[in-house]
Length: 308
Image (cartoon, rainbow, N blue to C red; front, side, top):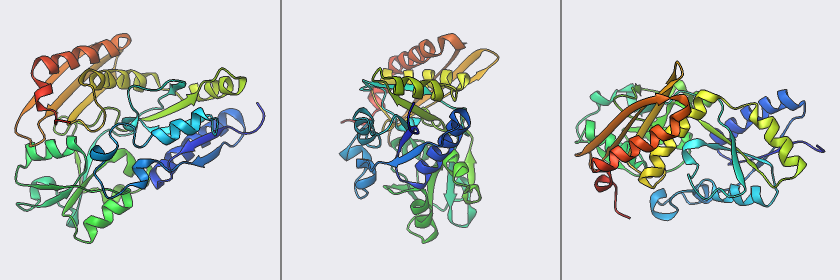
């Protein structure tokens, strides 16, 4: 292969931290330092509108996908929870490296925990899943739309725009910002998004020797237990027909050759909830996810989802 591998990445601090980590691992494998190319996505450009209202699924991946198919770079690095479950023609999810912490965290002024926030506290969150579960626990809270990168969201808490915001623990770990965490919310209490804490390493497969070399290198970063967990979680997502804009939390865990899965759908006002859990062998992770998704539907989950 002539020339270094090229990695397409969003330009945020978190996206670049993730891409640099992948680049360093690929350097160890190939002996050649990959080149990172920054791609501006529609989700990055539009910061004054709620994500679910202007772009839907794929707002952080569409332009990267287009650049990859056009041959600008061989590899793309995504937060797996942003990756659509469909429409990936010509692109192959080659590796899911070992998963980072999965939990959601609360970042507050004064380091207060969720139970200690004052009545009617203003929480910045653009995630329907987080909104629904927060209101399930604290129906008095006022949940308001927030956009921007991690630093922007933390700053809006510090300057008093919000009393609190929620951020994935994995992102704060990757950015070295764990000191900002006021509370880590246990997954059984606050169920994470499908794929939270995981990276998706995608390669454009055009059948060329260069693509084959990229696939061979990236495949060495795959972590089989994480891949099984993701297969189960994304199968639930597929069953409900949506992406990260659903008020759905699901978390799979692999242990001793088996995978356990718990999923929860909460109405956007937090008042109604359906849950389902199960386990199976690691080889049947996707089938487990489809089964749990079907159980949620049978229990009325579709009626709790926001109307388009």
